[in-house]
Image 1: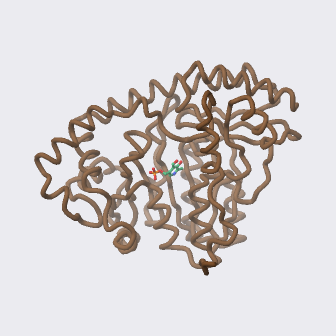
Image 2 (image 1 turned 90 degrees about the vertical axis):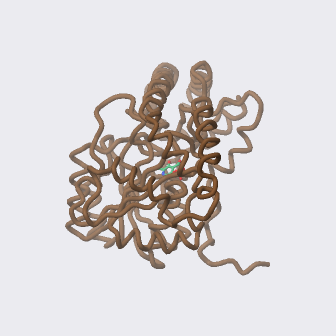
Image 3 (image 1 turned 120 degrees about the vertical axis):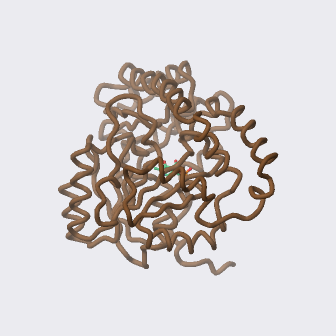
Amino acid sequence: MYRFAKRFDGVGGSEIRKIFGLLAVPDMISFAGGNPSPELFPEETLAEISEEIIAENGKSVLQYGGTLGVPAFIELLKYRNEDIMKETDDLVVLSGSSQGIDFFAHTMIEKGDVILAESPSFLGALQTFRLADADIKTVSMQPDGIDTAELEEKIKQYNPKFLYTIPTFQNPSGITMSGQKRQKVYDTCEKYGVLILEDDPYAELRYSGQPLESIKSYDQSGIVCKLASFSKTISPGLRVGYAIAHKDIIAKFNLLKQGADVHTSNLTQAMVMEFLKRGYYDGHVKMLCAEYKKQRDAMCGAIDKYFPQDAVRTDPEGGLFVWVTLPEKVNAREVFDACVAQKVAFVVGPPFFAEGGHENTLRMNFSMPTIPDIEKGVERMGQIIREFV
Ligand SMILES: Cc1ncc(COP(=O)(O)O)c(C=O)c1O
């Protein structure tokens, strides 16, 4: 009936969204979502802050604002990112880092352009790239991040516009790119004139190991666009993230943002700004890390205890996800159906692979379930997987 644009052909919406309905079933233990825990939202502090903002600055906060963001907030973010911002860089506040993925795609991709993504990668980004008419080619992941030899081969083969990477506690695999590889990825892309979209929303949620430099910190040539977000550290509902990139790229984002939403909500920008300025942020992130660490340890421990030995899991040092590769012959979709019947859910792996395949993989989230549910749910999953093996 409708003459929809061709770009929608074959793009059917995320499989994760489709299973959300299932998760509303009472008593379902879900490792499927990817949300931060609502139990840990700083609700009271944000209620206090927002009331004060409207009482004291209602006239400006409730008015339209500048497209790049609230000036004082931009300054604060630039100050906090001093170590990675270059002289030619600029910063734009975004309505979540998803908006940065969308803007970068629409700034750079023309129909049929090849882009490179990690395999597996974030579903939301893959869908955005498809809707922007990109031809997505993939590069394998290793335990310490993207396969850099394959990256160079694929760059030579396809001359891609950019590489999309989630270097820290990747969604979905939980893998972190080593420091050495960050440098190598930057050098390789710089050598061949390939841009890098560095999507790093989980970097601050580290529970073990040492913090690593952002790829953006190596960027002497203006090839890296870095996306950051307060979705996982404060609240995703506030929709506040930002991009740091060469000012010419930010100028294009500015144009796109005028058409997309004029600007990110003044109120939520001011709320995040005050949360930072009043010194709540660092303590809050520390608390999140302490809580999520317990949940991660519970999940990894339970997988080691209950899953068959030849099921291999990643060892995430942070973030929200563990990735499991089942024995070759086990189909995760069949395991999923059997698990849902026993009221435990996860996400099957294949949709995260732009090129398909990998039927024996799955993603498990540990931020949403309680520790007793993690123990119970993983035990149940383990029994079912053993039957398939
Ligand atoms: C890798 C990655 N990038 C971006 C996002 C989107 O985050 P935001 O809420 O900042 O738009 C997510 C959310 O799950 C994600 O996993």
